[in-house]
Structures are given as C-alpha cells and as structure tokens.
Image (cartoon, rainbow, N blue to C red):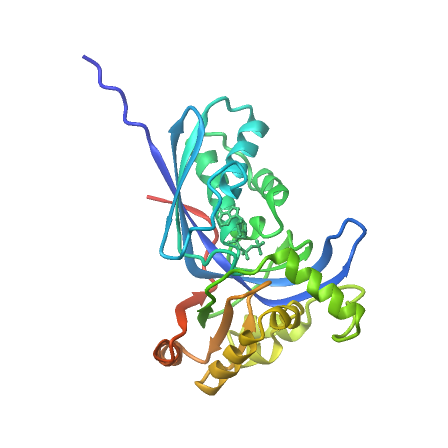
Length: 308
Ligand code: ATP
C-alpha cells in the first residue's frame, strides 16, 4: 500500500505599512498621481497560507473586521495567484487562507500585503523559483503598495510608490494605531485632495514630489522626536475633510503623550508616534480607556517571508 504524500501548505507572513512621509503630485492624464513616499513596515501582519487545489479558492478570517473583504476573483490575493500562474504557465490552482490583522481599507496596505504574501506563497508552493526582480515586477502590476510589502523595512517609493529604494533606519519606532469603524476609499481621498487643491483650500501639488532630507536623517538616527518634526502626508487634509473627527484623534493623542499623529496613507487609521515603548503602552491604555479602538505596533519590520 502506498500513502499519498500529504499536500504541503506554505505559510507566508507579510506586514502592513505606514507612510511616514507622503507627497502627492498633480493627477496625470491617466488619473494617477506621482508620489514620493517613505514607507515603514510595521508589526501588524497578514498570514497567508497556500495549498494545492484544482481551482483558485479563498478563505478569509481575521483579528479585524473582514466582512468587506471580497472573496471572489477581485480579491488581490487571488489576482496575485492567477497572475503568477499565467506568468509561469502553471496549470493548477491554489487554495489561499488569509488571516488578517491589518485593518481593512485603513490606509495600511492590508490587501497589498495579502497580494505580496500570495505571490511568495504560490512561488514557493509551485516551485516556480522567480527572482526578486520578477516577483517585484508582478507585484507592481497588482498595486503600488504591493512591492513594498515584499521588501519591508524602510524604503522610499517614487512613481506611483512602486519604484523603491531601501532606506537606512536604526532602532525602533513605536506607534499607537487608532482604528476607525468604517474604511475610506483611497480613490475618493485622492479625488478630494484634487478638489481642495483646485479650490486653493490647500497648497498646490508639488511639481516633483521628493522626500526631504530630515525625514531620512531622523530614520537613520532612530530618533522619534526628529521623525515627528519631519513627518508629512499630503492626503491628510483630504482625509480630515471627509472625516473631521480624525483630526480630533490626533489632538487627543498629542495631549496624551504622542510626539505627533498622522493619517496613514489615505486613512482613516491614525498613527500616533510615541517617544518610547513604555510611552506607547501608556498612550494605548489612555486611548482605550477613552473608548477608542487602538492597537500597538512598531517598525520597521521585515517584508513578506515564508515561515516554518
Ligand atoms: P489601498 O491599498 O487602496 O490604500 P488600504 O490599505 O486602505 O488600500 P485595503 O485593506 O488594502 O486598504 O483594502 C482596500 C480595498 O481593496 C477594500 O475595501 C477591498 O474592497 C479591496 N480588497 C481586495 N482584496 C483585498 C484583500 N485581500 N484584503 C482587503 N481588501 C481587499
């Protein structure tokens, strides 16, 4: 009697991200904006498992509310698996299991982390053995934030955010993330920014979005106070316009010891930077006591990787 070998399962862990700096240029003719972004991967993870299947199927669970995550072919992880199969000529399918810890539609790149996780998990399961460059190219086709979820750490992103250069960072930055009950649509927030700029309610779009040196110096020095002085997010005014209460959260955070607070990406998650791990724990306690949904996280952490 022969025993069929148990179908292997590959598990990958991929991080969410914060943008500690985000400058947005004017909308191009294709509707996309050139950006200059400094990404930091943070310790909220998406766990993606991949096992053999004839078809492409998906199950999603999470520590966060996953009700709005699509389970059909529009899910970024399924799109990633299909793209890899097409690219490599792989004929089978895959069953993906995703356990989410990154808030959905929170501006923290959770869907992008799922896509990066699915690419790496399927590449490993199917033994397609793509190079880093090939995986990065496929990742960029799936979304601007997907390549960074593969890379992790700290990186500068230009173009749509997908042309990445790793940046040096020392030490650890402690964040308290304040979650909103309802997500924000990224295209909507960009649209509001374009409108606010057209009405001259906020400053004009930078002609060439670039990352100022003090942001990179602060990261290199591992200095949260210097980083707090240098952080910026062009999308923040638009996110505040749609959700004025987000600006109150930044103020409450500052009043309870945060060095600064900023909307993560297109929001609505607000990231409060603490001066130390102890201060972050105390800030987290204060905000929770005030009725906010808050999570502790730190960065930078590594990009998507296969775990045992
Ligand atoms: P963006 O990358 O657009 O800034 P985000 O980080 O704010 O997004 P995500 O959690 O990635 O938020 O989800 C954005 C939208 O993408 C969701 O509202 C959902 O409709 C869709 N989506 C597709 N695939 C996924 C996935 N695997 N996980 C979560 N959302 C997904």
